[in-house]
Image (cartoon, rainbow, N blue to C red):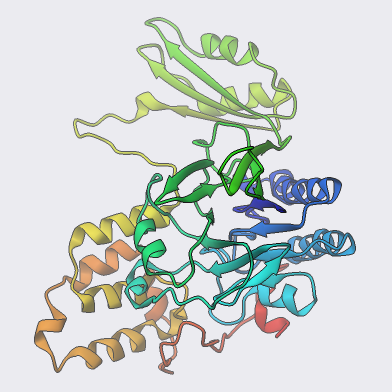
Length: 427
């Protein structure tokens, strides 16, 4: 039998609402998971990516994470992890540093055996590069096998990764896929394999209303007294309260009614999110936010939904902005060349100063085959990548070319912002 904590999307270093207190909350939530692992004497902690919110964490967040991992190491519990899209750097990963310090194991296509279970890893891979994956995993002689991966897998929300294809093409028959990236906890069975997300450990957006937690996963044929080889249980975390206030104003009602609705809740040290709807009088959000903080809230944010007036249907999502961009790119129907350029412009794997040369080289590689180029609108692709991308590449940029290898570490110029550190400081 093997018992592990399955967690992910801890997003350490996220200063939500620009609040240093919220920044500490994310580290504290990760520490709480580790405390539970030590108290519960589990066999391992499995992290499915996005340990950090940013690829250049603040020094305090980095040192805090190392301190937490040392506690786990002192208890003799291994930390097994993969790299998520938020924390991925262009060269060595933070996870590599922790592995070098003896505090973590970066999972890959070779089995890491804990108890009677073999764990494999699959880092986040951009959609444009997944066709090159062969899912070739080395053999193992353990009783069970699990794949730890970071991405949006079917059959869950925002999915862009075919779970059935991964399972069918893998050289290893997996009993479970322990996933990260989707902040909503969920579990499903796909072709006899349990597939699950633990959700994030702190609320990273207003859409994450349910309580936060992690999974306790047991690999044991007799765990449930039946034929199931995998048992997945949800464990809750005690995190900072979020208070969601709905103020639907009738004609003649205004700020006083909103304050009344806010006052009906326990605001002590909470993040308070107020939605104003209806036909009532205008409301000044700043005044309501000040009222809520005076009543004890840590942070208050007011959204007056009536301020958006449009005849068009508005589709709003609180998912990672990367998902929205990815969805729009897929709708554009770009050729392989267009996708190549889009990835070069938007991805973190190409230094800003080398974007122009990288795009030029990738087009030149395809120019001999007009059919391969297809048709795409360069300005549209650039706009989808985000405002300012082209100017960042052109303004003061270097003409030094890159070989295009996603694992190649670029030469950065300039100092890091105060408090931030990069992998070049350590490797």
